Amino acid sequence: MQNITILAAEIYIKKGVISLCLFLGIILCVFLSGCGYVIEGSNPILPNEAKTIALLPIQNQTFKAGLETDLSEQFNLLLRSNSSVRITPAGIADLQLNITLLNLKTSSSGLSKEQISSGVKGIIQGQVFLEDRRTGRKVWEESALEVKLTESDENETNSVSSFSLSGSIRELIKLFAAKIYERLFTTF
Image (cartoon, rainbow, N blue to C red; front, side, top):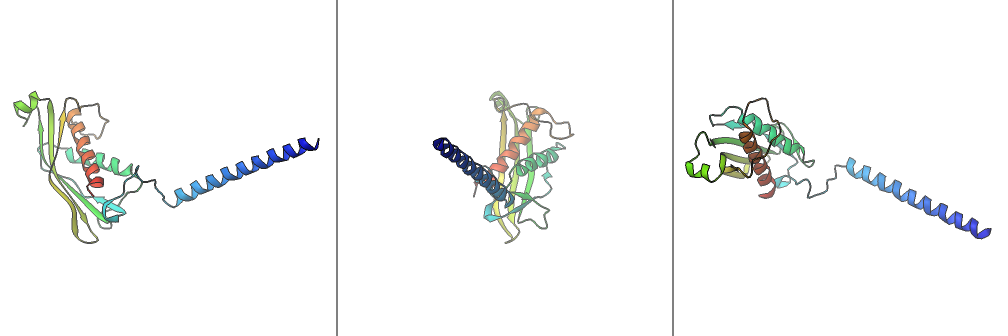
């Protein structure tokens, strides 16, 4: 009978230790998430140890209306999905991103016959620069950023804005936003 009592006491103590460890683990997770702790790799950090970024109004020098709105929406979605980045107004942000759309070529306007025959459905070109407001210096500049949409790249895209842009142009904008995002975090 005494062995059964000792065995029951040991099981009870083990359950208590497991419960205590589980409780402390939960408290630790809550504490770390409250501090803003971010697991690196899933949410890359901004260059120059910046904490905030502002996306200045996108300039559209193409003849296609609405590209700047869609690009802004796509890029903001990407930035908001990164918990290590805070988007703030231009006057208080550490970094300012300036994007200018320079050229849009589609199969109906601007693409050569060779490009069309090789499966290119569209090309968008732009200029991007990132300025560190704290130092007043350009951190990154790319004067000829280009993205091509080929038949193999084209997928169905999400509805981006109220503008009536074709699926190809929306996909091109999505690829352009992704390329800027990738360069922003991997160029440094």
